[in-house]
Image (cartoon, rainbow, N blue to C red; front, top):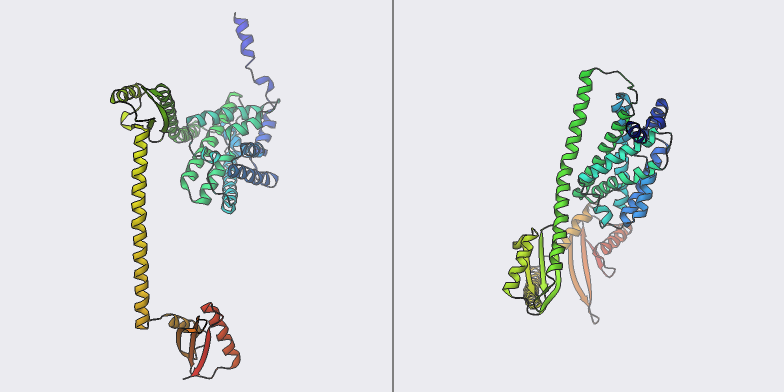
Length: 439
């Protein structure tokens, strides 16, 4: 029995396939660097992911995740903490921060210039992280570090890149930044933080299990301090996700219960369910039945079934087809009355504007001449005054503006031509008449 148990446990042994320690260290250190090829690959991956999110294309997003080099510095963080290589840890944090800034700027720039600005399902899915994302990131981090430490690489790394999905959330954060929608920015950035922290934790755990050698000796006090920081970071990152996960489960339960209720009450007496509306956010259900609806007894039975399914009856609305018609008629009536009042207000405002225009005309108040004079005096201070009026040329009744400038000195022909051209352009009328007189 003992031998059989040892045989079965040998299937889980990873030590025989473990890569040489120095080779593992070199692989991790090489993946941490973000310059040259790695940097350009990152920019390309960000652009591909941004286009995929913009076009709501899952295939394009997967392609971006496959070419993303972001896993390198995250693995480096986990590995360096496990081996107490604080120089490599600082290098990993520095390079990851630089990569995040480049990613945010690249995606924000793309979404800023992109003509398509609507948020599709792929974008929305990256703004609500839950505890399940913690499990995915942790498992992905473990798998990624196992693959990195093994001589048998296989196709684990691409799969981990897809599963942990580092590209989409950082691109979604860029979209939130470009469109100034900070619910997208902070939600996506939180998801990226969860992925980053727990991938690093997965790499740390694997490094310790594989007994990778400590690169620098540290005293027990510092080791305990590092462990406290790691624990605190995990708690700060994970606790909000527990709440979001709980809310997700609650919404799923409500949605399933609402569907079950709809199936149970689809036929009542001589009426059948015409339409139903389930609002998961408000936890409300609306049922609309054919004809003149159903009796109070049937409504009471429906509410009893709703209570059994943990649905708040105060948010359960039961209507008939005729009720809906009445509601539509009332809504249409209110809309018509609103439109009528709105039209009356527009007509009143128009009449008021006409009256004010007539009053200004009677008083001879026309500020356009004053505006023209002030603008022109900036270039021609010798212009002392300006008379502006609008008249008509008959018999065609052509409306033309007339401007008369008074100057303190004689203007030469060149200056007059410039002033005439400027005045016509300013009044947007080639028919404008411009005259000059001496003060």
